[in-house]
Image (cartoon, rainbow, N blue to C red; front, top):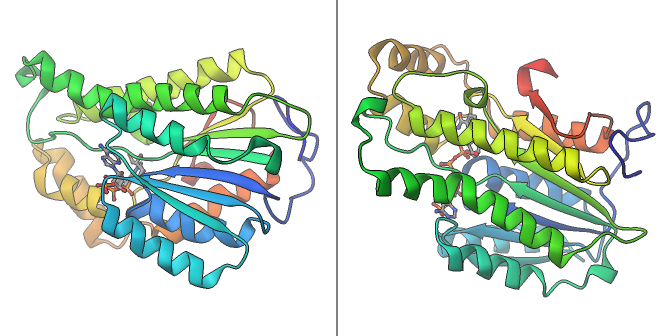
Length: 272
Ligand SMILES: NC(=O)c1ccc[n+]([C@@H]2O[C@H](COP(=O)([O-])OP(=O)(O)OC[C@H]3O[C@@H](n4cnc5c(N)ncnc54)[C@H](OP(=O)(O)O)[C@@H]3O)[C@@H](O)[C@H]2O)c1
C-alpha cells in the first residue's frame, strides 16, 4: 500500500496488511478485543500484535485464544493504565522491543476510552482534578502515546504508518449530560486532524464505530442523567438497533484495506 495523503490504490483493495506491527489500546473487551480478533488473520507471519489495557487476565485470555488460532503471529500484552504517565511510557517501552526493520506496516489503534460520569450535567463539574483525570486518560494519553510511537518508529522507505482514532458521533454533536465524553472525543478528532496536516506521509483516520453492544453502552443506558437522551439510548437497545462489534470492525478493516480515505477524515459507520 502507498503512503501519502490519499493513496494511489483507490480502485483496488489490499487483501491483507502485510508484515505489520499493530498496537491496540483497550483490547481487553468490546470493540478493541473484537478488532484484535478480526485483524489477526489479515497479518502476515512475522507480524506483532500488542494488546493494551488494565485487565491483565482478560488480555491473557485473548492472547491465548489468538495464539492458538494463528501461527507466525507474535502476540504481546501490556497491562497499563493509560490515564497515568507511566502507563503510556510502559506501552512505548514495550513497543520499542519490536524491531522497526522487521515490519512494513505500523498500525496504532487509539481505541481505549471511558464514558466518564454521565449521571450529572456540565454545571456540576466544579472539581478540576476530576476533569483533568478524565482528560488525561481520554485525550492526553492518545497524543503522548501516538507521539511516542511515531518517534520510536521513524519514517523510512518501506515502512507505512497508520494511526486510527476510534471516535464517535459525540466528537461532532453535543449530547446533554455527556460533557466529558463529548469534549474528549471532539478534542481527539482535532488532535488527529492536526497530525494529518503535519504528517503527510502518515495515514490517519477518525472512525466513529456506531452504537455498539458493549459495556460502555450498558453504562450509558443505566447512568445517563438526561431523561430524553437516556430514553433514546434505551430505545436503540430495545429496538435491536445496536451494532455488533464484528459488524463495525468489519467496516473499519475494509476502509483500511481499501486505503483511499482522506487522511485526517472523520468516517462514521453509517456513512460507509
Ligand atoms: N460502545 C459504543 O456504543 C461506542 C460508540 C461510539 C464510539 N465508541 C468508542 O469505541 C471505543 C471502544 O468502546 P467500547 O464500547 O468497546 O468500550 P468498553 O467496552 O468500555 O471498552 C473500553 C476499553 O478501554 C479500556 N480502558 C478503559 N480505561 C482504560 C485505562 N485507564 N487504561 C487502559 N485501558 C483502558 C478497557 O480496558 P480495561 O478496563 O481492562 O482497562 C477496555 O478494553 C471507545 O473509544 C469508545 O469511545 C463506542
